[in-house]
Figure 1 (spheres, helix red, strand yellow):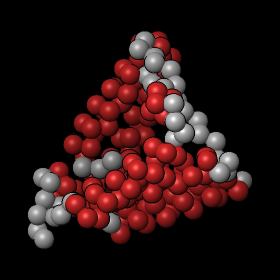
Figure 2 (cartoon, helix red, strand yellow):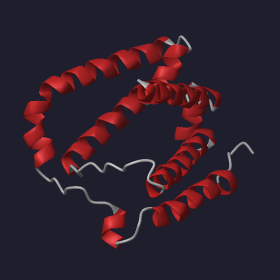
Figure 3 (spheres, helix red, strand yellow):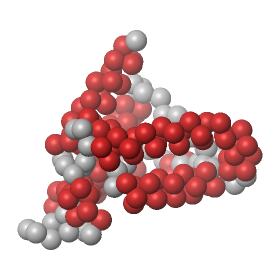
Length: 176
């Protein structure tokens, strides 16, 4: 139960950060897609930089257990295409449509409903898709750290620092 409460709390904080960062704003999203407003890109780079370093520090300290999923190439390509097309059509990704829905935006609610219907359809189609998309081109649990033979923390530190440096010191809005 405590794990669920912790996850819910983290989700609320993440949603608040998305809201405060303007990630559910049509103007911000359009500015991002036109590469004129870097706010959302900076927000995402900061989240990935802090998150990857945090996860690897927890794993390194024995406080978390990394669970690497197999690399299903066709599944990743298909899922990425569906994600990208959905974002292009609706202007929302899964997190921002929840934030937009909580703000009372009807287009975000439609996106959330579509995502839930899509997830339901996928769950029924999964047995048929499993062999086609998952088992074909399954490269197993490969990681950059296993390919290089180093502990992930030694990759996460420079990766995170590079993302954070880029987000805070390199990316500039066209409006600045």
